Figure 1 (cartoon, rainbow, N blue to C red):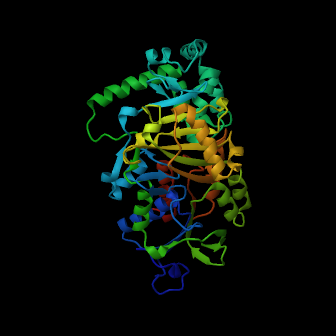
Figure 2: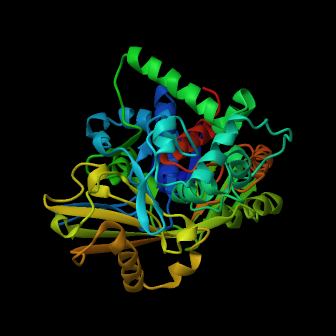
Figure 3: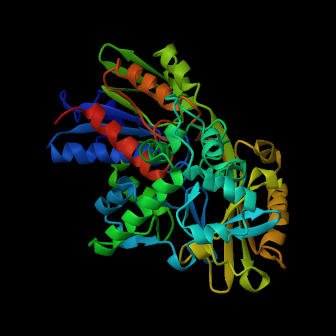
Length: 487
C-alpha cells in the first residue's frame, strides 16, 4: 500500500501516474494516526497511495516515550488517554491493543490538593470546578467556611448575559469565588494545560461548564443533575466498562510502536527536519534541511503551531502569522522512585496538584505506581512530578540535578519521605503545550478557513481543538480523510 520514498518524488515506475502522493510532516501521535488512517481509508476503497512521513527527531512518538528500567515503567510524557473521548480507544481496538489496555485502580480514585503545606483530599464528588455532593464538600478541610459559603452562592446567581468568550479564571471567580479558583481550579487546570486560568479560554477548554450555565443557570445544580442522570444510566447500561483514564500495560509507547508497525518501513524518514512547504500548480514541494525535496499532491502538517508557521511562511505568510499567535508553554517531568518503607504517606490516591500560591516548584505529582499496575517492583513506589508551565517557566533554567533536588525538597514534607531516591529521570518538553487563550476558537476558525484555500493541505495536532491523546488522534484522522477526499 505504501511505496518507497523514491517513488514519492515521481521518478519510479513503482508509482503509477494516478497514485496520490501524500506527505505527513511530524511523527508524533497525531502524524502517526494520520498516516495510519490514510492507509486504512485507501485499503477500504481499494486505492493506492504513495505515503511518506517525515520526523525531525531520531524516533517516533513525539512527547510519548516509555522507559523500562529495573522493573520500573517510566513515562516521559502522557501516561494515559481519556476513554470518554472515543477516538484513542477506537484506534487501540483497530490496532488489536484492547487486551493490553489497563485502567486506573479505582480503590484509590481520588486527588489531593496542597493547601497550607499539607495534602487535603479533593471532596468526594467534586467535578473539576464544583461539588456534586454537599456533605463531603461541607466537611472538607480544603476550604474555609467563607469559601464554602461563597461557592454555594452559585445556586442563586444569575446567568452571564454577555455572549463573548470568557477566561476560565473569570468564570470561576464569578460563579464560585476566589478561593475556589485559587485552591482547586487553578491547580487542576495547571495540571492539564500548564496554563494561567486568567488567560485560558473557557469555551476552548471546558465548554461543558459554559453550556451548564447556559442551560441550568447554576453550575452546581447542573453538575448535580448530570451526576444523578449518570448514576441512573450506569445502573441500567450494559456493555463493557472502561476506566476514565486508560493506558497500555507496558506503557504508552506500545501505542506508538503499534502504529509505526502498521506503516511501510520505507515510508518513514527520521532526522528529516522540514524547512519549507511550497505549492507549484497542483503539487506541493516539501524541502528538508539536508536538501531533500519531496513532492506530493497533499500535505498534512502535524507539528506544533510555531513549527508549522515556520514551514508554511513561504507558502502563505498570512497563515503563518496566524499560526504564530498560538502561544506554547514548556514543562518537565521528574520521575523518582523510593523504597515504599521510606514513605510515610499511605499513598491512597492518584496524586496531588499544587496551587501557585503555595510557592513550590511543583505543578502536580502523580503516584504512578498507585494509579496503574506494574509501574514499580514490589516494595517500591514511583512518582512523576511536573514542573514549569505558565507560572514556573523560570524553574526550567535549572539543570537536571538541581531540578531533581528541588522537586525532592518539595515532595519530602508532603508525603513523608525518609530516604533518597533509588532512581531519577528528567524529561523536558520545550514549547510543547499549546495555550488555548481567550479567543482561541475564533483564531482556529480563521486558520481553518485560510487552509481551505489550499486544496490538499491540512493541519493537525494539539494546537487547535484539543490537547489530549484522543483529541490528537481525532485531529490526525480528520486530516487524513480531508486530504484523501471523498471515496
